[in-house]
Length: 419
Ligand SMILES: [Zn+2]
Image (cartoon, rainbow, N blue to C red; front, side, top):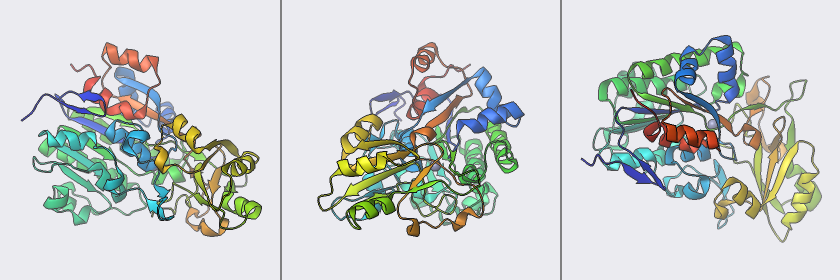
């Protein structure tokens, strides 16, 4: 077995001397931990921050789930791994394509690369949509696993490296829209850690609670208490525990509770004619009930000679818009793959979101809740917490900044000072 370590995307990762657990708290805005520490509901995380390391790092823009999970898991920016949204418009076909196929991912994950060098790794996600990219080229031979709680009852040794997961975890299959979908991921990770002692675990949760409840609300507090209790158990089992998030979360409603939406496709259709542009909301996935596919970042593709500059001029004049960029500028500013970028990028302020055509968004899933969502620059700040202090070299790097969330595997594997 090769115990030297691995190199991936310009980073050398030493061989872990104890299990590394990286948790991506989907939608885990730093405000939840700030409030949780103040209210005394996250004692383990509070201890990690005091005795280990705690900071707020920069995540990717667009602050969506797939781009940030892939950055964290590959230790690279979007320009390297290629996943710049949950959705993009295929320039060859003109079709909107979901960006979850492994063929779209341009590099391997830290877990996959370690597994190919003989390490035992585990990648467990709440939603199945991330699973195939996270496990791209993963070698399941040495007891590695790759599965989701969403499809926990369908696991096979051949595809997921594990079977009978419900029995293994001792929990029934959780409902798609419930905090249990995330807790199942953590329980499965704890069980694996205790039984198989993997070298690396990547655990990615779902943002169901954060979309619905603000920091300090009872349901959010309960969820964070539940998370914290499990983080404490990972720590007690001797793992290096690293906590981050894919994106934050902002309230995007009017005072009366109705969502503050810029219906950009309607604006552009009225101004330039139907069919002259396509607004793609890259937050879109199959699970839109809690945000109605409304986020803080959209891409506009121009057709039939529509000048992107005209789109930019109109977008800049809209209330609630924070920034408008042409393709090249957006790619440069946010380190995005140019070949998957739209002609125009429009980003909303934290208190507003951007949709396509009003008729195409179903907001009934909000069920009277205020709209909380993400996607813009304002939701790109995320926690960066480790349960052990940093070695001097890494402490200096963190202090010099900017600290990026996709450095968390580097910091967790190479950067902590272990007793
Ligand atoms: Zn997310």
